[in-house]
Length: 120
Image 1 (cartoon, rainbow, N blue to C red):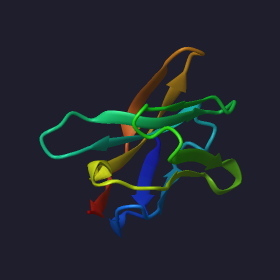
Image 2 (cartoon, rainbow, N blue to C red):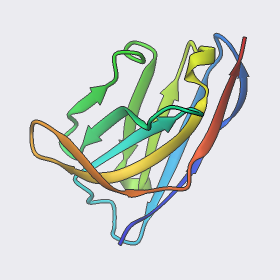
Image 3 (spheres, rainbow, N blue to C red):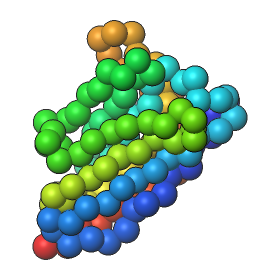
């Protein structure tokens, strides 16, 4: 069983940056894949970015070129660097752990989330 704790959310003006962190514990950090989801009020949860243990990455089209996902296995931590933030990026951001089969990411463990609010 893996435990995931997110941090780094907050209020930022449009064009600003934030870095989210996710500390993983309980099962070591040999998790096959990690990712970040977000959910805005009234909308479905969407996968924003994901990274496999081998370094394969996925980004939603809406964040390509602005967000960067990375992981530090020595610190058991996952990151999401978010630049050029827009009001539409406002959402609760969730860290997730799961697996990657070479084509698709699958997630089954979730953190409690951290709120990101971008003002115009």
